[in-house]
Length: 235
Image 1 (cartoon, rainbow, N blue to C red):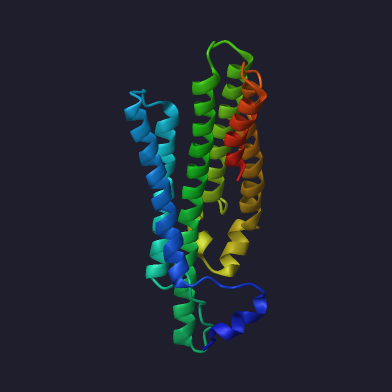
Image 2: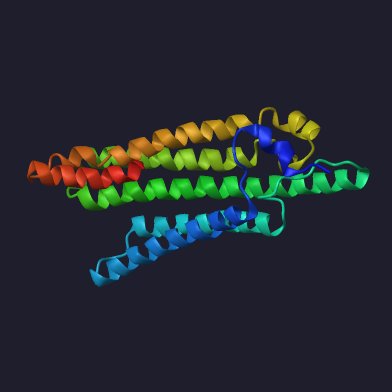
């Protein structure tokens, strides 16, 4: 049976079960804390809960789903430790079962990720409109509406693309290598397209408020401070 030493030539450290648990617990907990603080601040300011807040809550639900995926994978022993190579028919069945479980978890994770990303982007656009859109019929209003429509279309497209990469044979996502090749073509291509397009839509979304900030009647130092706050989102 293969040991962890056989994977040492990869050139990077493999995660362990504890780190998978940490990713599934800590990051969703941080997101939940910030979402709760956001709603608490709204209540203290007696401000109305807006569309941007509801979208963040929708994103949080999907982030929790992503966390559950990590926790489930770690608890079932298929995420974290390296899967041993089979040395017998019994070992081969165990290996294939582990591979199938990981593929199912990754499939669910990707769907949650697409929905969470879309909700966060739409929340940022909605927040920008809430802060800067004073007169409804304005150039900024038209631009943000167009960006929101783009993000909604992007989210919908990748939601269905990630699910139906293999056509109606959704189970091919966690099938054998031969089945995946026959039904899915190159299953990595949609994932690569998602990563690149997600970065581009992030950039567009985060740059939206900057022209409005620099049109505000305030000192240069304050404009730089506000710009810096928005730039934190790029991290």
